[in-house]
Length: 260
Image (cartoon, rainbow, N blue to C red; front, side, top):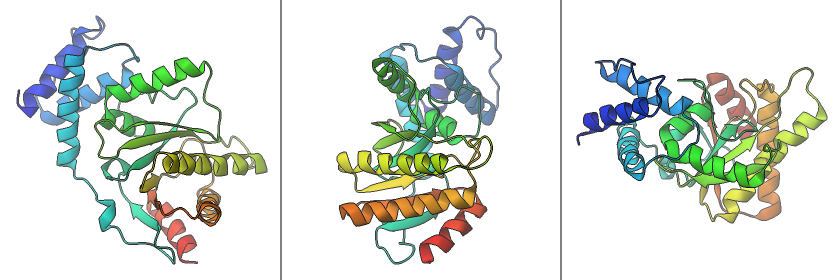
């Protein structure tokens, strides 16, 4: 199958497995088809799927990610005084870091809202269905929601990274407290430790909890930078840390902190 044929075939397979969607019309335009495929993946529960469908999906998404462009960590320049700390603005799913961090929810199986622009949805959509299946197995074995401040690691599947580290940040519903700050620092430490244990040479950290979890951007960045610097001082690790930001606001905040 060609790349375009794979996309249409995958859409038909996912539509056919749920009677509610079987009568859905497949858009004729490329972007409409891509959106429909992503939406079907977003809403699909973590149920078994044939290896044939998963294999075609892997080939399709890997090529999609390649066409979107892959950012080489080796080409990034350090920010500040440390040769191990970097600041990069862009889509974290394009980085070829050994590990990238996903800001997850306590269910840990991803965002089920079609085409939602949160990092959890974007990572799940580009990694593929295997990621949700893997996370579901982990959660079934655990038997309870993921506690805030800890982390789990999975393969990156179709992404250019080797691993995805999932962490649940604190939700700030009201005044910021010392407990919120402690839990956010714990998120970063947990992610760094998991990456180190896996022998990663690089990790990309997202702005945990600063989106819908409402952690103030300035204080979140301060905690992230403080935690990473303290972790390096304690461990002497040579792993590279990339602070990944998407908004200009966060880029400016991190740039000031890292150059201080």
